[in-house]
Image (cartoon, rainbow, N blue to C red; front, side):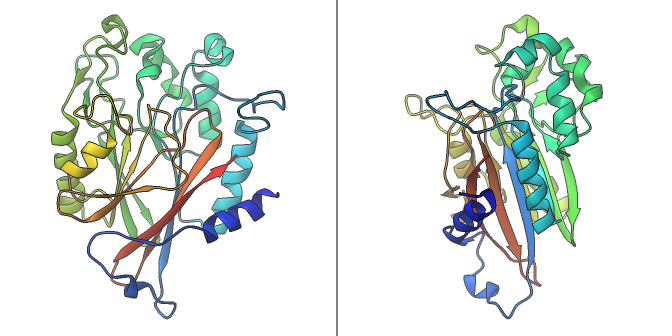
Length: 305
């Protein structure tokens, strides 16, 4: 099947999800809408080349070149597009062992990623190794709950970034997982982990109330859900404990969701969580639709690269 045909069939099968408290009647064909497309990856783990035909699990899938072609086609369909990554860019192939992350950042820059958050494996060459590769990244690193003030990474990240697309104001903030137990302390040094729920409440207040954002996205490396430890902070628990987040783009647990999970937030309003597995095999695609009053709805899918 041709990739374009696959995309059209995939989109035809997705359902429109109401976000917040608006009604679907706001999106009749007679009403002019603005479409914002969010493309996303997570846990690519230095997979530059596609899997070969001999790979039993993922034959002839993935690869940066294929992803680049797909992203370009989707941007041509809708210029109002953001491309985001939810962390664990590093570690997993010899490319990282040889180049230390330089190639990954250069390729992401060529693909024109808009922002990324930081995963635990992005510390695998230490915080100094991460810092050393930053000049190769022509996109913003966003993390709100890592306090880097006593480290070499101080001032190198932002808690959030605001994008404007066709009159729509989009606020994106980032969250990282607790590094203790996943990364040895000498690798992340004096990085302080801050409570994700408290930070999210601060971020949504700033982005919604002070900045007046129409769409709020959380780039999360917390993990989708922990079945054996349901009290551990995850995207699902974060969604239920907060408000005003429209979409959580997740990572860490390598969870593949064929379409976004719809979750009720603390105010009993719909929001979305999505994660697209790992290794660059899939590209997440969420379309948000805004009517003339900036009420919004969304649909989404995962596309095989």
